[in-house]
Structures are given as structure tokens and as C-alpha cells.
Length: 192
Image (tube, rainbow, N blue to C red; front, top):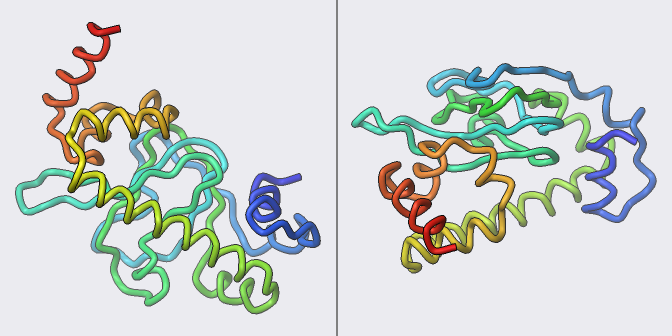
């Protein structure tokens, strides 16, 4: 069974949807490490489901520093949702952190799929609820937790990220400087 269908069934509990129903709405695309799937300031034509690899969503601030807001590993979704739904220019860049394969769906196909399969609309509602809760949790942790405690919690919840994401990119996501993260990691190794 295709990973997307497995994910839909896992999230919704619905076993009725099959590969042949949903997959025709998508194109499979591959991207090399550091290749952009979407560029800031350009129209956002796709919503991506990660089959293999890791991608990140970021913007470049007024000082030229990249600020990473989200990551997506296998079976995670990513887009600039506002730009995707409104056909406006994206405020973010989406970049492959490693060689990546995704399913990509256009806004028109996304709408058609939701209209044809109510279970998919239910699926996306559940996905959005989880993503929103995770986003709020991250903001709360960045705002309230000591940096070392935040890193420890993130590392325990998402060990795959720690191994797969370059230190500079991870530091930007955590709200740390790369130097601080480097020192923190050295401290952790030393204390083991």
C-alpha cells in the first residue's frame, strides 16, 4: 500500500480509500539536497507530502539570516498554506535538506480531491489540528523554557531531526545561534 494511503488510514481509521482513488491527483517529484521546492516571493503552486527525505520551510530576515519555521520528514505535509490556497506569492522558501521525493498536488486538484472524497477533507482537518497544536507548543517552549531544557525536550521528542538536520538549520529552528547549539552539544557529550 502506498505511504500516503497508509497515512490517511492511520489518521482517519477509514480503510475504504485506495491507491487508485487519491494518487491520480498527485505528481511525484524528486529534489536534490539544498534544492528549492518553493521560493520566497514566487507563486506557491503545490502542497507537498514527503515520501522520502527531509524538507524545511524558512524565510530570510532583514539581516539576511535564514529563520527556519518548520521541517517535514517522511509522511509529513508542507506548503505555505496561505499562498497555496490564495494563489499569492509565498512568504517562504521550501528547501530539501537531503535528497527528497515528494507527492505534489496543485490547488485545483486539492479542491477536486476534497470535493470527491469527504474522508480526505476529514483527514486534512485532523492533520491541521495536529500541526496547529505542535506550532503552539513550539512557541510556548521557545518563550518559556530555558534553552537547554527546550533542546533536551526537542531531542527526546524528535531524535530523527537531531541526526538528519544540519546544525545551523536546527539552531535557527530552535531560536539558538549555531555557536550556542555547538557549545550545548559539546556539553551534552562531555556530561555523558
